[in-house]
Image (cartoon, rainbow, N blue to C red; front, side, top):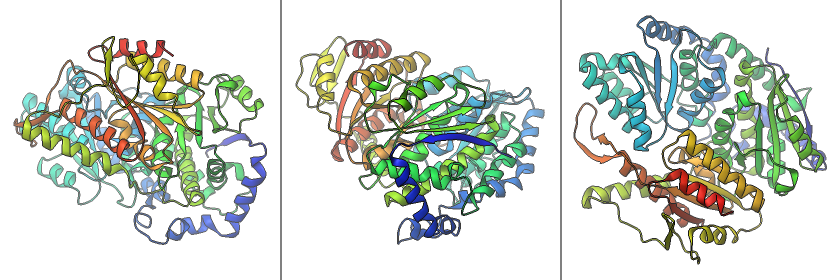
Length: 565
């Protein structure tokens, strides 16, 4: 049984939350959710009635463990030692969480995730992996995600080059929806296994389906125990009037929705160190589900806890920690004593994470009900994709992406955006000082993810938060487009967006077709098109955007900008 304890201190918001919970109980909101009643959210059933399969997935998957185990035992017996998951957003985040949280059991496959179109990131995996011992997991609900298909074509060709076309398919499995383009292609290329997921489960709600559980099994997680813990939470959630409201998705959803409507819409997470990657999964779930129709709850993950004075009155804190682990207890207590609302959630061990996935899925659905939005669609995601495709078409016609003229340059950094300044440092400060009440800062880094860049971005965001007392979000592009990208274009429009780009020291071609060497674009071109498309989509949505191009020195440029704050 999953054991979850904790506490909640909402101050004067508590009475309002309790009133809203009572009202939802009277209106049978939870019973209607379990009955797949789309009117909980909207009068039209589009992208609601066919997006509630996650409610039943944990129990459904219990009967599919044998099929997953057969795959795992087969690849272990054949000497596979590594797995590389090719996917984006909902297809990649849960597997990454499971690998980082649980590690790899002895004798199982070490899992890595590729969700960056940066050519350096792609090449790094090629150089690091032994394809003879690597299983490639091609994971996409739609079966046509451009990044995932680019990865798949690239690595399939690499395996064919090393092992021959007769053996290549044995190194690939697919996780997708029935009837997708990927399902057809996987059949044609004789993939070792095709897992067809319940099509009524949206990507960001898919952690407890094949998308999350197949990779979890490959690293050695005991899925039977994991699902047993999860199902205990599912069963508790299916009881409409729970006796302990704090432990319910209904109550947590009420907290999120009520405080967001009251202006505390910067949902700031702190985690026990072992659980920290869970924040990346929560970030997508909450941001993409709630950021639309001029509303939104912005999850803040990875931002270090600071002194109470650096926080504005737009914060709600959630502290998720392991039993007996007290890393951030004192800092959370200090924030609480300063008058900020705080929710503490304690779990026994990582096997309770499945229950947390389900609990927060319910809470997000309930928050969507209170905000009056559909938490299962993503209406603004396509805008950046359309503009990126336009850029790629222009490249294929003219051989280049149209160059922009910088507003100013200095210290090896070029600045793009309408801001009056003499240096990049002055441009940064001038850009942020135009902030409005309820503002936040979002750093969009279209560069290769590395430990050094992680550290530089972490320092940059911390300095920004401490000086301007604004919530900060950091994401690598295009990864964040499948996570927070919806919220950035669909919320109330108070974000300030700092895009970071740089030169690519290396590049590599994307095959036009699987198994063929012809190539029209490279990964570097794709990433540049995505960065340009996203920036224009933000501008078209009325957002404030500035771009800093750091040339050949990403870490040095970030340090220079951070040092100016």
